[in-house]
Structures are given as structure tokens and as C-alpha cells.
Length: 239
Image (cartoon, rainbow, N blue to C red; front, side):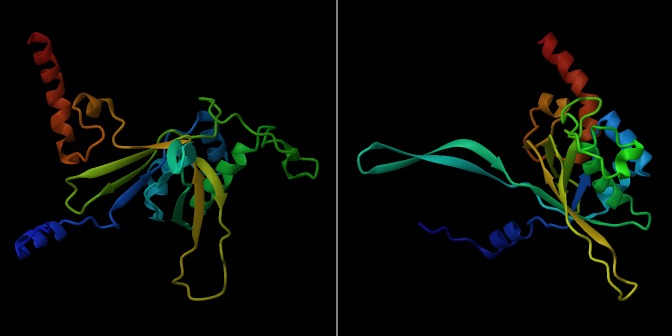
């Protein structure tokens, strides 16, 4: 039967809806070889860790779907079974700073992925240059990252939902339009990222210990958890 709700009940529910403009993108987990290459192109690790995520003015929480197969084992009945999880590419749009570091970060990350035959060689600008792919998952020289995150939170900063991407790298950078016009326009670039999978929830071992890894947790309780966890652990051993 339909549920009868009062105005106060409805107001309480719809007054707590999430707003899409409170989020943060964070880049990390790049290999030493990739960081060295980006640094040689003028993109330092400090910019990657702090500024690059703040320049992401438009992002999307990851989506996924299940690939299915039909079964006709029973006459007249068609059943569907899931066999693979499919992850959709991640699209993020960035403001371009006046030193073009955000654009260089994307371009030279892709450049590094296909530059296994020594990008520093003088042949890089020659007609005889050829591509050679770097190994993707090498801890010292790979081009994939396992520590790119998107945090979704609310204005009161009391709850947060974390998305961690495994095996992420930029697949495509859209063309950037430049044209004569008002000086108020800001140069923007949009990139599509491919990844192996994502994790919805915290990946911190502390959150696993607190049994709160895959739920919405209060980030204001982090300090309390850090100091109380050792005591609880000792208490469990004693009891």
C-alpha cells in the first residue's frame, strides 16, 4: 500500500540531498620514471599532488555495467547471466593555467606511455622516430597509476565517499579550441582516462580495521580513529 507521509517527513528527506559541486580529484601513485619525465617537461610533483586536482572543474563519478550472455537451456525460457563487469572511461575537464602545466601533464603522460625508445634522444623530433610502448605496471617505470582518487563530500564536510582507480592512465586528450575573443575566456582541456577497475569506498587499512571501508564515513572522526584504534586493538587482545 502507498505510504502516507507528512510534510515534515518529506522535508527531512529532500533537505538532505547531495549536491554535485562538492568534490575533489587527487592524482598520485605515478612511477619514478613517469615523474622524472614529467619533471623534465616542466611539471613537478608538487603541482601534480596539489594543483592538478584543483584545476579539475568538471568530473564524473565512475560508472559500470555487466556484460551478459543469453541461455536457452529451458524450452521457451530465455535467461540472462552476467559474466564480466565493464567499466566506462572516466572523463575529466581541467582549467589550463598560464604555464600550461595541466595540459603538459596530460600530453606528456601519454607521451611517456609510448616513449619506451628513449624520449630524450635527439631522434624524438626526427622522421625516423618510432614508438615503443613502456611496460604499464612496472613499479619503477610503468605509466599506470593505482592511486588516483575522486572524493565526493557535502558542504558540512561530515561525510565523504571515496572512489579509487586501479590501473588508470589518460587514453585521449580532446582538442583545445583557441580563438580571438574576450579575455575573460579560460582555456580548458578535457581528457578521457582508461582504468582496470575502481573501488567504491576507502582503501585505508585503518578503515578496514574499523569495519567502515565501504560505507560513508565522517572525515572529522579520522583523528579520533587514529588515536583510539591501538587501544581498542589491545583491549580485544586482552578480552
